[in-house]
Length: 513
Image (cartoon, rainbow, N blue to C red; front, side, top):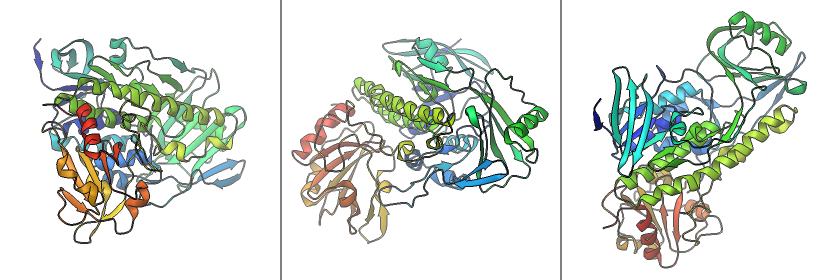
């Protein structure tokens, strides 16, 4: 067995979380290796909802056009009560605004999401290694030694860091001996099937609610003729997954034999897990996605939280590998663990309401969209307390409608897109400070953007807020310097001592001379 370093970071698990992290690291010039124990990418529709905040992440990573093409907005519910079907809106369909370009939860099966994100790896020369699993790992002050077993046998290799994105039964978490407290309810299970359904229209998400928590549903999957079918089992009931047994059980749950299941593509039995890792890593090894937190399926929260774990961790790993202080990585757990705890509360409440026929179980709103997630209380958000009446450090940076120097419309998110930090100067006074801010040559570069700066501003990009979109969205009416983190959150909001404020924050997240 050879003991060599083939990559800076080993990612264990190639689902949405691991693949997102791989794309973000690769575009930063970090050498990554992604292994997955399964023979192929995930084949089922399981996590089928992408929230507005995750849509913004996927836009930044270059995947948004494919995501939009492969999905749709959610159809209205069709609640079947005997022979009657009652239509009901599960969520209000909103229009895009200057601040929020993707206001609706997007319906797309997980097998499509996985494939689309993984396609973003190819331009960076990264390929998922299937049929390859982690056997064990040990770490020291200089790196991590991992034994990896693949098609050609076991090898021992060195990495600077390892990230476990390998699901609720995470081998990485087990190797770290990190507790995973919570509960798994073996008495509450649901069959999930990807299949065609005879005689069922595709313009509704059909549900059959019954007393005592009995439930069946069929959600049409976009750009296909498949449905995701759900059948909640009774406590102690033995699940049978052959076609004949599924149809018998389906007919009993729906009260009708008209809607035959056929051309079955994928089946699973889901057990609601509600767990949160005691820590998000140890030393040079980290946990992300379901390896760190598992949720009920209600509210489309689990996959989205994992994608944003990766988006938070990626830029921090990139910076530390480029020479930034290693304690920057401590902020990963400090920022993301409280978010997961809140998400667990939302999804659990929705799931419990389902068993009580509570209408709140099927309603969706701002709690699920994850646009209001903030790191204000985290170690990076609390450094500077200046802000506006709308935003503070740690908040999501909204989009805005702007113009370039030729008068052509553009969006602020287009300036933010990429692995860099963005220094926004609003007003002539702040624009004069752009040139004065020192920035490290290693790691993520700094993109300097002047908005309503007047002539002669030193910047990479000059924009005009002709419609007042930025001014309104950010609540500013005076010169201000804003530093936007690579993950789209406000790092600093500097009205006074602007240059010093930016450089004080930079000292915590960039390489020092």
